[in-house]
Length: 392
Image 1 (cartoon, one colour):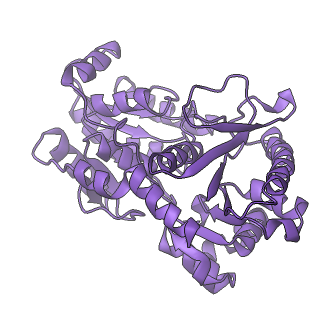
Image 2: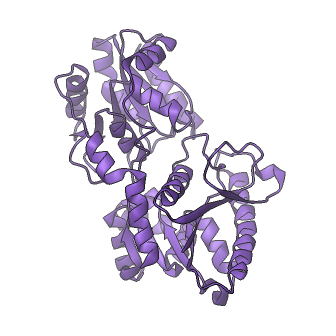
Image 3: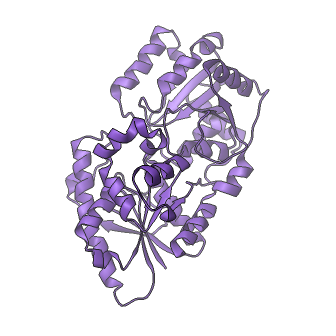
């Protein structure tokens, strides 16, 4: 069996920013190889691709589209189309090159544009010679149908087409399965609940001296740090976190709220700064920018006293299991999209949130879930489950 993991074309793999899907593609491919599978990545051509030991086959696009675009505007959409058309041509050649082989070929897509254009530009006869798998990463499916019906039919029609035509559909939570089967008539037998994983070797506890050195570089010696990771936008809810923490920060000048992630919404970022200034907590609310996944991000988990996850909507909180793997207790809202018994504390109200934060920071509450994450969410575990589905 030959497995091709398909990069989205959003940012080159390995991701230099917190691009969750690109991280998934690289880590899954690496672990498929670790467990003895023949796997490689197909990805957009990029002159500045970082180093990775995972084999990557490139798809050429005009140079104007090789730059990462985080604005998600018209150029971003055009880039997705151009890359997807070129990708379809490459995949067509791959199918033909395996024409005489009886080996199973798997194309695993992670983006609706990529598979949609593959469906449109490659004949059904050729497509029948390979197994197509599609993972639904979109967060939109994780809420009530009445709230999303109009949006998904207008903006996610490509994804609906992908799910209906893929041989295997991987979803990250049960509510997505229910929407596809009961609302869109998708064959439930081909839908498999899968999990995203974490590199438990990269995201691991480190020597306290490393954390203290990083703290010192931010002038945070003797400070207690609450850390939040995610793109800066309303959905990730950094402003909601600061609002809940306001009085606590005022009463505890040794506590700092630090957040990291690419700024998707400049106006939203400005609202966080304005709120902090208006409430005289600007010295305790620190934005550290976009951190590179892996060693750099792991260092920030290490220097924090706890992580918080207040996102309004997610398909799967990758940063939650990263933080738990790094040995940190995570404070999360009561809607969970993963299966863990340890490593986190739940809050339902603002008062509960502040109470749990205080308990963790004061060391009166500690919840270490690293061993459970290793047993359930290490990428080698995830890769073995995925490979079984590919082979079935």
